[in-house]
Image (cartoon, helix red, strand yellow):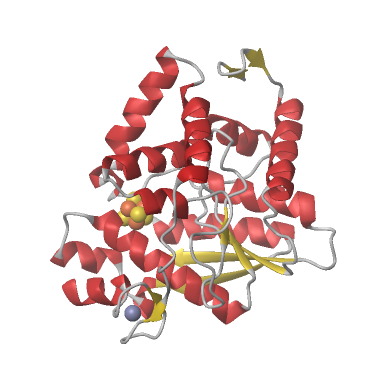
Length: 289
Ligand code: SF4
Ligand code: ZN
């Protein structure tokens, strides 16, 4: 593949080596798994999450002190998630990794139901429910850290979205490693693919025969992320290197964002999970839908 940002061509072997190297460097530089024994990997069955599971297994699979488990959240989206779960199950089986499925049906509300009652911002509900369910799953399973498959494109899109929404604390929360508040009840997240582009991940997955699910969520077209993705991709096409420059701006800005000292987590009065307010967003949203 041709990497316009670096003005070079990579064959499959070199791309594979390069991805391994960058993920390894990220893990070391950001101390992503320092002192951690059980790593959960959030796997949807798509290219990013399955590539992440595959690479982490390559890098850490022989380390007997570390256990990797796959966690899939079933949001209750017909003709979509039940298919992608099969891809997640397949790779876990091939790699000998335990796989757990947690569903919105049990812990929140299925997205198909949410759409019947309140169809305008599906991803807002889905994101809040998913974060809650993943944290619950990690605590249930005794996971020390949760790896998420966000790639370079996701990172810069989220950065741009948070600027447009004037949410500086969310910029701080979406770090390569950890969040803004440390709390035993909140399982920290790591993003080892944060500086690897979507194109490289697709090529990596195809070259390494990772059987990933290729369709999009039927509700994705309503997401604010879409016009932002289009804009950033057009900028990258016309000005190669834009995504990396945005990433570097984001990493520099992280150093300057001051986290208010009085941020502390309460326990939600309804569900007992962590919340910055009296009632957590998952419980507020559950009532809305
Ligand atoms: Fe959920 Fe939106 Fe992603 Fe669909 S696109 S799975 S609704 S967050
Ligand atoms: Zn709650």
